[in-house]
Amino acid sequence: MALNYHQLHIFYTVAQRGSFSAAAQALHMTQPAVTMQMQSLEDYFGTKLLVRSTKRIDLTEAGKALYPYARKSIELMRETEKAMSQFTSMLEGRLLLGSSLTIGEYVLPRLLGPFGRQYPHISIVLKVMNTTQIIDEIVSHQLNFGLVEAPVHHPDMISEPVMEDELKLVVPAGHPLTSKGSLKLANILSYPFVLREKGSGTRQVMEEQLERSGIDLAELDIVMELGSTGAVKSAVEAGFGLTFLSPSSVKHELALGLLEILEIEDAKFKRQFYSIHLKSTLLPVSAVTFLTFLREQQLPL
Image 1: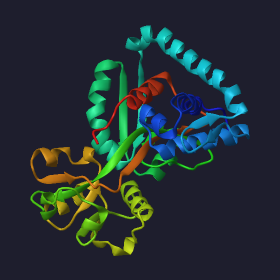
Image 2 (image 1 turned 90 degrees about the horizontal axis):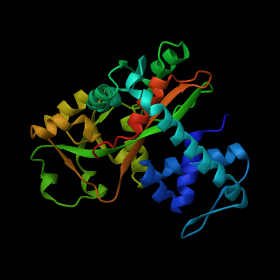
Image 3 (image 1 turned 45 degrees about the vertical axis):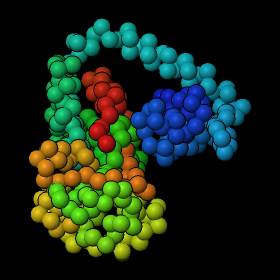
Image 4 (image 1 turned 180 degrees about the horizontal axis):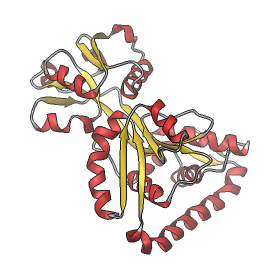
């Protein structure tokens, strides 16, 4: 495993901010994702870098030794980006990108326009498919990289967080829950649900959060399990049940007043989107530029 610049950046931010939560907020990541990356970095060096106390995070002796090198690596990367910025308008390339359903159909379309205006000489060919297909096409060099809704554990792949998203409770317009004000998970368990199929990224995030909240999944009245986000939206709009979806996927229905989003006080259904590519292949500059652009965006939560 090679030393990861992204992990050094996270380590430096944690050290500066003094807590995982503050670092996560600054980096637009989830706190568990920050913790996971720090554990991976400690595993890489084979030593503890951080001391976790009740009030803040402190550096071990090894962490103190690493800190100036992490700072230098960040400064060097910034100097590199600054030196290359004069050439960004001349960047050229044809990116072959695969993405999972939610990202490809609902997140990327609104970002490709601004990216294309900023980098008009980079063209993107996007294929929407499931994660297994994306991995297969990356391995066979048919795709440069992929964007997926969960980390990929594959011996030949590098998986890195790119963007954060959050699922929200989606109900049909005029549903009785819209008049109840503040909601808790206990308030919604008696209603029927329309969900994505088991194995989908959206379903996985929902189930994991419910389990963390101590809710038995068998308690849910699941009346439909559907294979696409569009089908789920149509079923909810028709009044068959409630669901959990990314706000990015229901913007059109919200604007038309067909669906509504409700906040749940005692649970957050956050997730990370990841980029994946081959360890053995360096990403082209155009791909690095696109991923940097994505990391600077914030999805409407």
